[in-house]
Image (cartoon, rainbow, N blue to C red; front, side):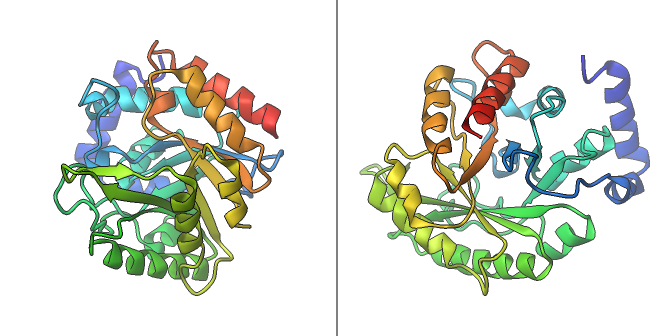
Length: 297
């Protein structure tokens, strides 16, 4: 067991009695010299969902609400030699730091989590997490931002502006800006629905690519498209996101595998699909994804 009762109690003790331990943990983390591994790929586990109130996995609407279980699953995933690191909000990153789980790992901090899942104002994705200055100060490796594009919702505009500013500020600090552009529309009931057609995804990619004063440090995080030609829209490095689990791990793997064959795709950033597989075996789910990435590389 990766998170024993003793380690859990010590984490809670430090949280309550020694808040300065967090800054010490940032300072002493051993950074690896390069973002990409030896095969020039990148495999990250995503764990920033709870900060946006997105806790559900399948029919379990609060699957990610149990923090000890989430951390245990993250520790299992991060122990896999092919997992390069984690994408997380400050609270999750700091808990993993206090558990000594992030040495020689890539750590990408999540920046905008203000568009709470299900809120009427969800598309106005305020920056409520890391900013570029803190990512540089805490010696992390980059920042991720969510950019949902909804033509009928003016909340897209401030998010576009904030993401452009974040891209510029991260680049000024020599840090990766991981932009996740997702085209959405509202259905007849007013619910947000992702647009998965090729024209919408291509448009989102081109909009995200042009954000900020330079694209030198910009990476894109996008869903694996059914039409791989969508990826011809950019020269920027791309990582494929896992998205909501379909309930069929083999189908998820097949979709990712198709995208990994494109020249601009450098790897995977997957959260719930690997951390909460239907059979509960996190290690096996991570191993299957890692094997697929090895073959693609």
